[in-house]
Image (cartoon, rainbow, N blue to C red; front, side, top):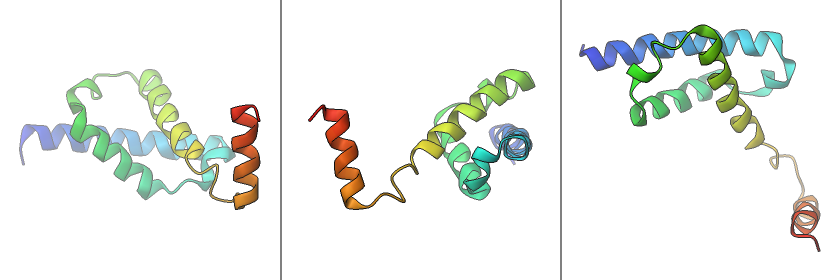
Length: 96
């Protein structure tokens, strides 16, 4: 296993623990799929060096993980909307 793989695995393990903590402490995030989140973070770590993540203290890393989780949560906002509700939302946003 390469050094980069070891660092990525270390980062993913830390992120996984933080995801568990956030989901346990905030019911808002419990509807997210942990495996999908891990996949998202793995993809992010392919684009950003794990060396930037590993040295972060738990507080900073938790803040960053929460941010990504919030974006993932927001991306599901329209999943339960009907086409009419989406149209109403778009109208409000566009100021119609």
